[in-house]
Image (cartoon, rainbow, N blue to C red):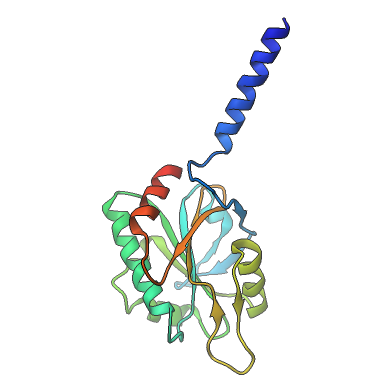
Length: 190
């Protein structure tokens, strides 16, 4: 009788360990805080809307004169490659300058790129303090707008988030974007 309990215990541990594994080596497992923001079309998009979906996020702003244009171009290329691979992945760009970046301004900014809004949301509709705290808490990255300046200090990574709202991995979003690695990682958690 004891052997059966030991066998059941070992089997249960094995199954539980397997369920928690994403297949991504060194997964970050950051929990995303609940949110509900406004996209470029004025529609509400929140964490509950993204549950059950794999998504990739980044932080940008429309008046950025350094890293945001190349990041958005790289995310546009990633969107194309994901589609070519037949992978249904949502893309989310959080504005780090929400008091300037209205939905209309985000839509105009995005319109400079050959991207599709079909699976990409550019989000705003929160205070500067809220996005600063959200970025730090959920993505372990900095967002800071120095007083009296129009440029915002922010992280430049792309983040892969699983169906449960956990950040699994991050990637450089400015130079040497690892498109193949991102696509392979998406396949591991799809």
